[in-house]
View 1 (cartoon, rainbow, N blue to C red):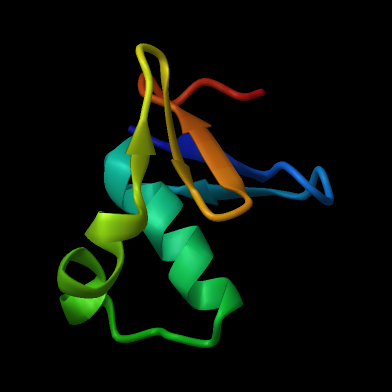
View 2: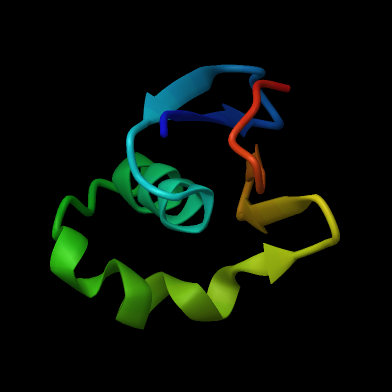
Length: 69
């Protein structure tokens, strides 16, 4: 299921075809120039914040159900 991740500072959006939790970590890591997807869980899961409806990582946010902002 595709999900839309939004940079909450710039309003730019990116579409990922993984689960929303991983998608928001991908967006954050790739903005930093890190494309080593094997290590995203290890390196970025500690930065992830979760609410009832969203995941956030740095400036990026995504709805848990993947819908657009």
